[in-house]
Length: 189
Image 1: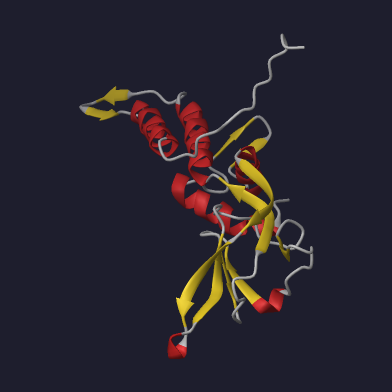
Image 2: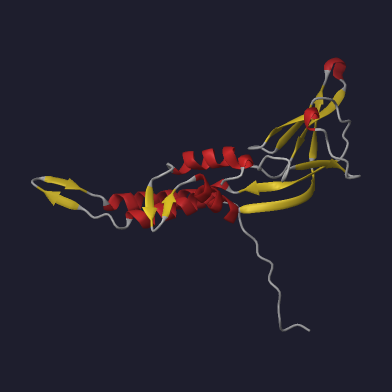
């Protein structure tokens, strides 16, 4: 069963990929159940620990500066207390009643001025564009079995489905985040 904190990311990805809950079946797997969509998202997940959030200054009444909004460099964050942890440098957790979160944009807004205090976030972020590219490629693989039909002056160009799916995969891949891999030489002692 898909994690409850993934509901928004799954819904957004469904919209990007026109993925219904039962588009097609391959073997015993039905595409695209919430579990299948989450599986694709998990391939493009970044787990981050204690990222120092950026406080955003704003002007309050009387011209004083206050710090209620804090921003993460990450977006499309999974919600839920099991994976989302907002804390001070001391490790003291923020009370959930004291802030709200825009998980899609990675913005935390406190109900009271934080005075620029350093806040740290540990959570999971997802690359929806890379995930969408993967789903469109899978849909192209399924569409590859379609064939063109011409009869009695009518034609169905079913092969266009695969071409369309690959075009969408390329489109979303062009917006995906760059992946980095640490390489280690084994010829160095």
